[in-house]
Length: 204
Image 1 (cartoon, one colour):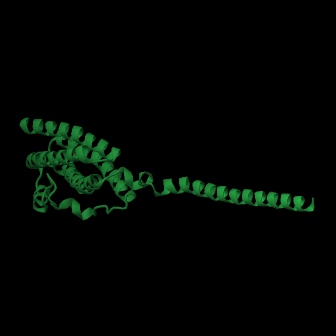
Image 2 (cartoon, one colour; image 1 turned 30 degrees about the horizontal axis):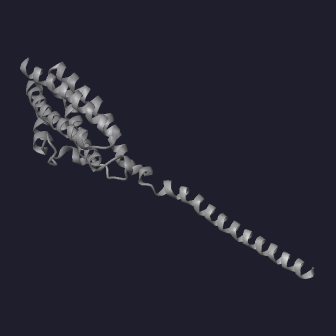
Image 3 (cartoon, one colour; image 1 turned 180 degrees about the vertical axis):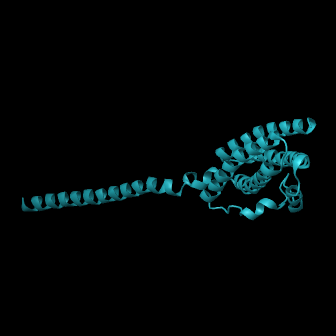
């Protein structure tokens, strides 16, 4: 009987040990399976703030900021140099639309940890479509009256056409929804202004 009891106890102890080891193994697997979902969202590129834009979006903002700045500089000249009220009103409209867009695009670049173009770039020709050269800007500054009106309208038409071209590129190749939306606004708004400026040139 003693041998039977001892044998039974040994079997029971072995069973308990096996159960304990099995529990440890299950617990180990549970810890592993719990850590996996936690790690996944952190490492997933879809969760990264940079995942919602592409190189085209960056280029659009970095090029359009100095482009807009130059348009604003040109518009400010009209206040004291233009002779026609329609030209002055158009200039105010351009300044009111493009000033806030500059601030918005600068904010995007800061969020993306990308350089914001310096103010000095606004008066220089960097190969962007429609951008005036420093000499052209200097010439415009020296004009007044009807001569200014004519030069301003011709230069701004060219400037707007360049902006529309850049905006269409963003619409087709960009990934950042707000940038594509702004590009659509630029296309529609500046196309309408081009039409207005051409009419002003014809109705001297």
